[in-house]
Image (cartoon, rainbow over all chains, first blue to last red):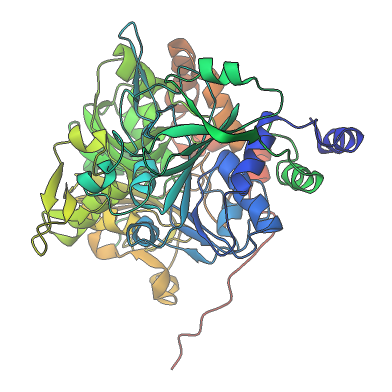
Length: 267
Length: 305
């Protein structure tokens, strides 16, 4: 869809006419607070960071694992973190180990991740999926994800919601969430962090502070609770205060569409 | 001393079958594609490839049958997702089986940093509890010698046989200026036993010495310098040319099946003699469309005293 078309459809019916990717970007942006240091990643989380920066977190700082630190947003849509517009105007273009030092020493508030699978304790698999017939699907691997999941203050993950993608236990634990439950992170020696929020194509899951198990906190518009439960690989608990996910505002949507005018990431 | 030689000569002299090789150290920028393609043309086999993130080049070398072992943090097509040759090799042993020893970005950076420093390992707080640690013999859980209650992951040093780095400019001795994100480039150049520099531009040493903070690799560790303009295409080189996004999306479509990859390889690697031939095939319009449109030089730096 062209930018002009997007603007027309936006003005004709503002709050119901958005894509699932747009809703996820908006939900992710609301997880970023002002002044936070954010390990951003690419795709939807990058748009979420730019949206937060524009609307409610103007002083948030972005770190990229290739060695880029940005206080001001890039001027163009990025397809990779190494695109020249992400270097021009950066605060610092440096080595990976410098940026990872900030992460390891506890200076990063929140990291955004995606994965092939996520389980009920927020562990992520982005390495290898073993299917029921024993065949394997090789995924690209950790990249920086396992480091970010080990060392950031908290983790927000964005995922498609299906039974296959949300098993009770990941078939390969690339990036640690809460492992096998309460106290696991402390026992293995991780010094901080853990899964905080899982934004899916059906709802938003958060993690119980005692049991460390993911529960459903909000349901997206037009999604049925039964559908979410049947598309989750474990007996999903729900919040006592289960609500609808807040719709994107006109302002949020207009910024997202300005950031991704051809809907490369948000179709 | 001039180390300036042709790409074909550099690969022939410094890369052997069975070597371990590190490239792609800036991640998505400045990937030495022209060197990788020459390795494929020379039929070098049984390579071990190391990287934090490989955006497509290693996928091409795997598909061409040059690789028996991967030591990566991530192998794919950054913009599009899967790298199909990597997947075919792991999932179906096509064109032949490869061993994969997984790392994360930080643990690869630590391994290369330790290699650069000449020490046996580097500790990190990452990967405790991860299956990556369990599946990799070069990552070991240890207790801090200073506080036994503190758990760490010890990452064994890596010193690859060869490092290949694409830079904006170098002198004939190999001292290299590069800018934009650096990734693990400086450490990898110190860790590698042999170093090949591929430069967009060859400059007088006076240019390098006018801005010593911009020198990321000193000539004293360099074995060969190759002048290969547009050698990093389709990846970007800050201040020289942009990323050719379409080339990556086309590659993704064309290499979904093995036959499609073979056609791609015939067309873009075996079908051209060298990088200047490749550039001719790409065409002037494509190259011009990727060149920088608006100049944005940094403020000049005063070194006087």
